[in-house]
Length: 138
Ligand SMILES: [Fe+2]
Ligand SMILES: [Fe+2]
Image (cartoon, rainbow, N blue to C red):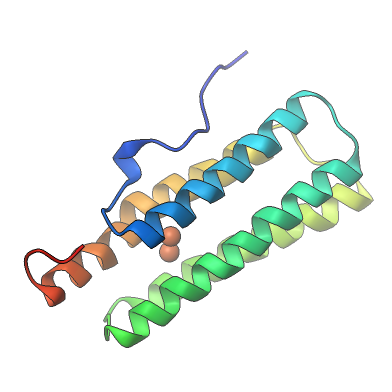
């Protein structure tokens, strides 16, 4: 049995406080989902947690997408497509939680997407923002 942590880690921090806080919160929800799956909780608890993940992901993506637009970020379209795919996958799990049962690995799959996205696409826009805003910008 794995004991991999799904927790937030400093290595995901960009130094943009609002974004880092939102990412941390998404990790918190994934940890709660993971704990719920491990305890074998019923569909209602899982669906509620997935709804919270989806709600936070929606808010967070809206903030990122608005910032990218304001900053004229050239990679915005591809980035937004990544958000769209994540939301589609999450919607699939939300439906599945009610009609069927969701696999143990769901929290790990979501965690895998989140970490890859933060380390890849999100880090790129953070770097672009820093360059546009110049030294000293947080
Ligand atoms: Fe993003
Ligand atoms: Fe993000």
